Amino acid sequence: MKDKITAEFVDVDSFTTPNVLYKYRDWDNVYHKTILLENKIFLSPPKDFKDNLDCNLPEIFPQKDELYDIFLEKSKKENPSGSRQVHRAYARYWSEKSPLANPQELKSLITENNDEFNERFGILSVTEDCSNEEMWEKYANDSKGICIGFDTEKLFSVVGGGGKVLYDDILPETDFINDDFKTKHAKNIFFKEKKWEFEKEYRLHKFWENKPSKEDRNIAMPKDCIVKVILGKNISEENKNEITKLINEKYPKAEIVNI
Image (tube, rainbow, N blue to C red; front, side, top):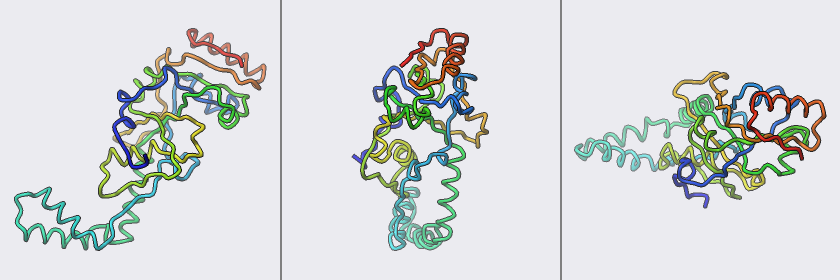
């Protein structure tokens, strides 16, 4: 499974999602209130995730003695009318001058690529499960918070691409040479360790051509995107009343559920 990457992980139209996806929130955290107060969702940069393997899979690079053959094939593919001498000269040059042949340059290239990924990519993590005790404890302040349900179709319409996270004991590695951009990012975004399987996570993602501001990462939703708000079993009466009033005023079609 770990090496099988298909369109279903990056194309929302090619897999089946639940009609409603959920986000657990801590109402005592001012940033968590943004969804209801401003009707916006925040797309986090990958570097904000606590798991250091999340969106940061190990990457395979070719050995130095493989570089000549790699660049020889590259020259033939990109310049099919070139002579044998031209292809060989290209391969000799780049097998010595490429960052892949120079550890310090390679290290700088990796850092640059990772920084660009973090600066220009945003991810929204949601789940299909609104009754998971571990999620209530971990992400909703031990059931003192809320769980917000979104209309899946409308949520995807404002964010864009996404897919279901897959969990495995052995994570895939990304291949610097053989993985194209789509495959590399699908592996990084949609694979997590088995220990996170309880989250039943879906991820929506967006890539900006230019580095987004914090405000750019806050994506406005249509009013009817929020369809349900579940109040945690340990929520305070004060917070319960505040949230109920807010929902009735701003999202009158949303269902309020007490558990």
